[in-house]
Picture 1 (tube, rainbow, N blue to C red):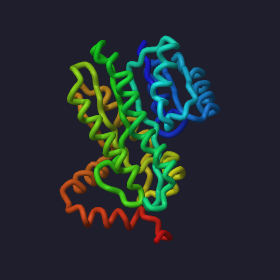
Picture 2 (cartoon, helix red, strand yellow; picture 1 turned 60 degrees about the vertical axis):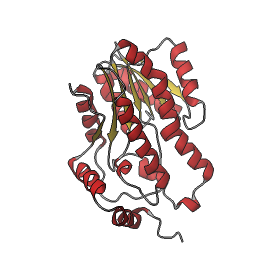
Picture 3 (cartoon, rainbow, N blue to C red; picture 1 turned 90 degrees about the vertical axis):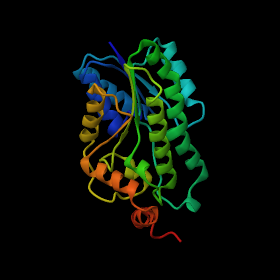
Picture 4 (cartoon, rainbow, N blue to C red; picture 1 turned 30 degrees about the vertical axis):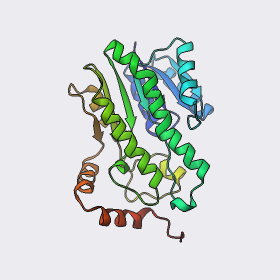
Length: 257
């Protein structure tokens, strides 16, 4: 039985992916900061599915967290067949008003730990010539986002990094980025931001992810939602200045000078 490791598994996309992967018969390794939520989710899954669930309550925004998690996984005798790097967060403020410590944690979680865990578990997949690395990016990766400058930049890194690694792996191993748009999760509450439009159901992101996992044709990245695909396309061909100015009107806090 294959094993899926999911970071940021206590809520939102990570939680729903955990439930959906358990329904497919995968054993699970769930990682997040909130131990109580992980325990509740594990209980929920084992009550309805036969999957074995291992939980690690860890803060992956701290340097060295990836190495620590890898040691726990290996010492407990696990191998990882599917890695879902889902953990991440954003903040909504002008850069000059950002908390530097929070920004450092954001970069470490969204970029540093994601890269480290990919390096940790991808070699085993390559050796077995099977497995998948799923990195959760964002439609914010397709253009700069004033007011969420660091978050958008980290997601641009995630998408670029993932697409490059896709070009390195052999047949049988999938590496791809999933770019959701605004989704009904805790993201905007944590970021202190308001979405520009309606929030898509988490289930849509799960369907997009599984479609890429199940496809015979390996893709370096996928975007959830037709409207988001159009926005990403036009963001790429339109002049940068009007795109950035338009986004700034939505996300730069109005009370900041």
